[in-house]
Length: 306
Image 1 (cartoon, rainbow, N blue to C red):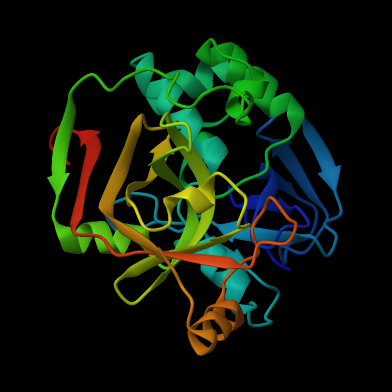
Image 2 (cartoon, one colour):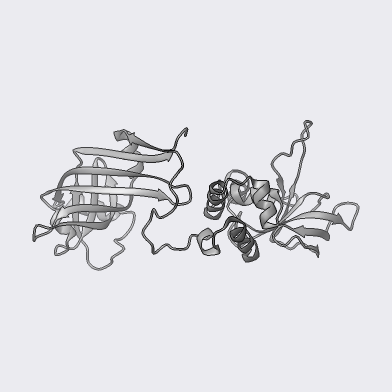
């Protein structure tokens, strides 16, 4: 491991490619750039003498001829990086915390430099948090939350038991209709969706189910005496959606069509064999219901200009 003054020392968390702590190397003790180093930590702004362990790597700050800083490159000590780690370090997008930090900063109209100054950290480290999956220390989150007028729990995604969609709406939202192919792509192959049907007493009900997509059909399994089993031999609506709380964006897809019980033994065995997941509700749920959409529509909320 060799470094120059101005390089970054990154301490990884047990999660591959995720940074736990980050600091600027401000002093060398050997002319060849080998450890130990004097490091100014981005989360505390304190300088300490560091003997890097196996969980540390160097991110070199390289400059082009125009004088602008290019993306730091990790120093793996001359050993080729593992593919997963290399992908995470070089091409991974922002993590959930980074997205929430970015959303809160933009809500306040702060630049990265202003937000970093308020949080008493380097703008480069804030950029790293916003652009890469990271696991910042608690002290960092406390200062960020204070600077952004929010809480550590909110930056970590707290409030998961609350109904979704309680965040701030976009300043200039745009509602787009999705074409059928986009709807099919968003349905993907499996997940959790909601079936809307009429219960035995005639009242409308909505039931969440684990589903798969097989060909043109949406299939789920349930117990014969369950509420969801009432969907069989009726016309139902099936809905799946995704909300990005940090960015106040999302989409929804609605499929409408007749539902029927899958009775062919070979087809039932094939569905059970290739099912992506077991029903989360547990228990004996061996009745397969197939929905064949006659209508497939969807909408997406995004920021104007995207």
